[in-house]
Length: 111
Length: 116
Image 1 (cartoon, chains in turn yellow, red):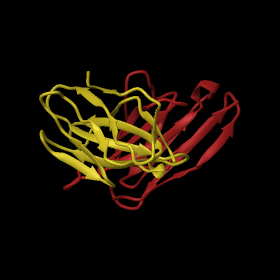
Image 2 (tube, chains in turn purple, green):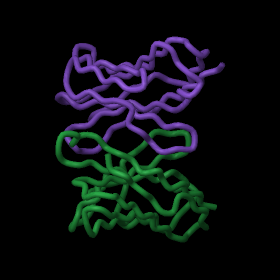
Image 3 (cartoon, chains in turn blue, cyan):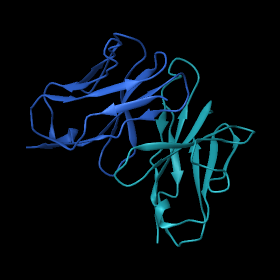
Image 4 (tube, each protein chain N blue to C red):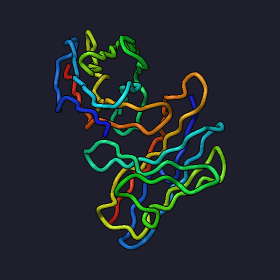
């Protein structure tokens, strides 16, 4: 079946550091890909998405590019802030069907 | 995006009892889903709530344990029956709409359940 493999956490970085959280997927066909973020004590929010190969999703300084060749959707940010501390989930789906999530990566940014 | 509310936001329940969680959306939506997030874990789909018919359950989840209703396009309930401590989780509903953003899902704030 479909699956998402995500970089193990936790990840701790200093403020203004460069962030990469790796995500690869296994699926039959070409799914839509998503990054969701869960801030402490809050629900899940959609951070960005890409629906076809070579699409780049971006939001709040975060970016991820849909790479069909490597079946990857790595999340990047050039300069992280303390407020970016959260749990990040990579996910995929087909159409408006269920989401398949990765295990989540807890990110902590220290001042 | 849709605005989604869930009730209750949290509850502490005794073993053997049942809890019904409500999910209300401010607009009509095509799809509604129920997910479970066990402590420190990722999200797992319990079932897809179908309007006017029985829910579609994922492997490992059964209707007797997690009965679901969806009487219309803006409301759904999930019941956690005969609870045990292993049911302690966050339960989230999500919705997807037709149209341009048809493949995006938006999540409610979740219901944090603790079973003693």
